[in-house]
Image 1 (cartoon, rainbow, N blue to C red):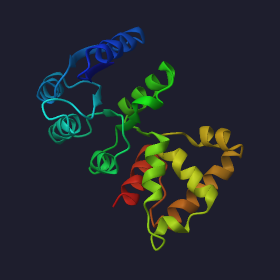
Image 2 (cartoon, rainbow, N blue to C red):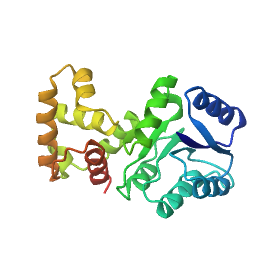
Image 3 (tube, rainbow, N blue to C red):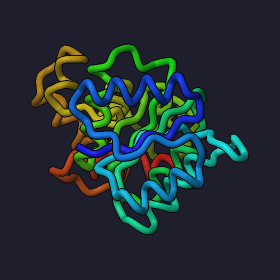
Image 4 (tube, one colour):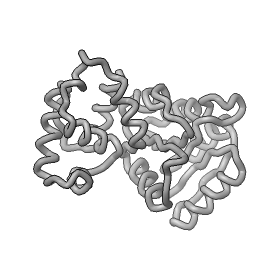
Length: 214
């Protein structure tokens, strides 16, 4: 699997490339600024990009914007964002095209290489991975009059885990309930949010997050 890495700090960039290489990823390019990232994404067409949100030259959201520009040229290009902060705007922009194959992880909450590699593979496979703190912030900024307020506590827990990219089996294990119960909660969530149920977990999560962020 070919990966483009974008990180301005040398030690972190080098660490990422070594970690990914050790897990049998091929590094198509490793860059330290947004213009170089955009060129690498369009020229290399990698299987997935691991991108720091804040890159030179402006150190604002240059990395995110370069990734979004590339996704407009190459629809569905898998992108996993890394950030130090939970920014609702970043998540909303990343999810806006509803094409899937996106992720948003907080740097200080990646606790081991297996977790990180699994997230990369999920995004590369067309899935959606959101850090639980990002999901919590998105869910927490809803008005009482909005549909998400109709969800029960358990349904909100299921929705948050869905948004992290977890399967029904994984959700059941985390919440110590049956897989059948998870399916029942999922159906109820979609009904309350006015969203058509789907067997496609990735698009299901994407649709829910896009709706909550609208």
